[in-house]
Image (cartoon, rainbow over all chains, first blue to last red; front, side, top):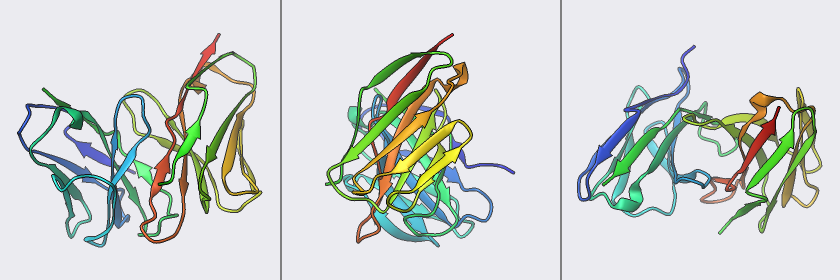
Length: 114
Length: 112
């Protein structure tokens, strides 16, 4: 069975540009969460979506937005990129929308902002 | 806000040795999780703990949910080279605006 897949694997952008990252959850999973992992740190929670509804939002500016599609895949959008947005962006899927549901992580998208 | 503390940042052990990692929090959690992350990969769940005092094993790994609900430890016995990686603790408190909160991670190196 396929795990969580993310695309692209690597991305290079310049300051001020916009970026869209994509995630496909494990088949049967209805919840997707997004995390930002800066080098040397643990992942930081950005968003959780369940059944296309936003279930939680971390402490990130409005430049960050996301959505979930009817097939439960998800996109994370970041506008007006800053150098500090350079990080590994992780997507995790879980069966339901409960906080304690086990989350399975994808390999991440490495975003570099120049 | 909730913060998880993991130290030291790096640990170096000899193959075959046991190693123990601790994770402490300023807040209580209802669930404690331990993840391992290899370079270029996402974190992989090792052990999940759901009750205070719970002790759970997964092969050579053993983890415990502290009685105060503010700490957890992970023990790896008879370490092998493939144990190399970054170990993260994470916690969830199932209240309003709850989320999965990660520690900064401990990088484990195993000398053959």
